[in-house]
Image 1 (spheres, rainbow, N blue to C red):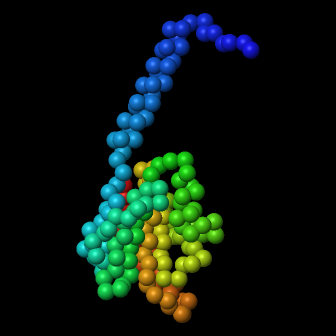
Image 2 (cartoon, one colour):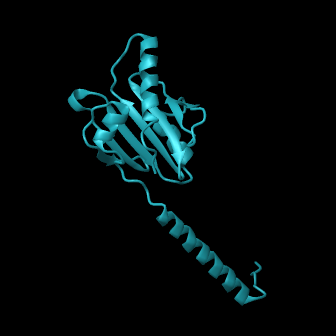
Image 3 (cartoon, rainbow, N blue to C red):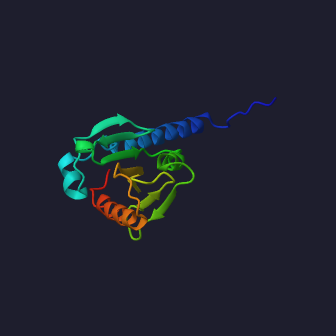
Amino acid sequence: MRLLRSANPSAVQRRGGLAAAAGVLSLASLAAQAAPPPCPYQADLVSKVVGLRVAAGQAEPGIGGTSCKYAGQNGGPSLWVLVLPPGSDQAMMRTMTAGGPKARFEPIAGDPDGAARVRSPAGDGVVDLSYTRGGYVVFVRASGMGHEPDAKTRAARDDALAAKLLKLPRIP
C-alpha cells in the first residue's frame, strides 16, 4: 500500500481553507433565501382571487416541505399549498406529490415560472397546479368540488378554477 504525500503542505491547507469558505458561502446563501411561510395566503385573498370560501390556513406536516390547508367553509372546496425546498430529490417529490408516475404535467404556455396543470388518475374534483420559483417547487391544489357527471361541464369548471389559481400571488 502506497501512502500519498503532498509536495507542499501549505498548498493543501490553502485548498482546505478555500473549500471551507465556499461551504460557508453556500450555507449563507441558503439562509438568505428563507423558505416561504407554511400558510402564505390570507383566507380573504383566496376567496377574492379564487372564489373559494375557506377558513384561515392551518399548517400541516409537509411531505419534505411546508404544507398548508385552507378548509372549505360549510363543507365547500378546500385549497392546499405545498412548497418543496430546493434539493436533489425534488423531481421525485414533485412526481409523488402529483399522484405518482401516472400523473401528467401539462405546461401552461408562456408562464414565467413554468407552471403546469397536473393531471392525475384520481383527478375528479381536484384541480392541481405546480410551478418552480426561486428553486422551490410549489403545488396549489383545490379539492372537493364534487363529482360532475358531464365531462364537458366538469372540464369547463376545472379549467376556470385552474385559471383562477394561476392568479394567486406566486411564492416564494
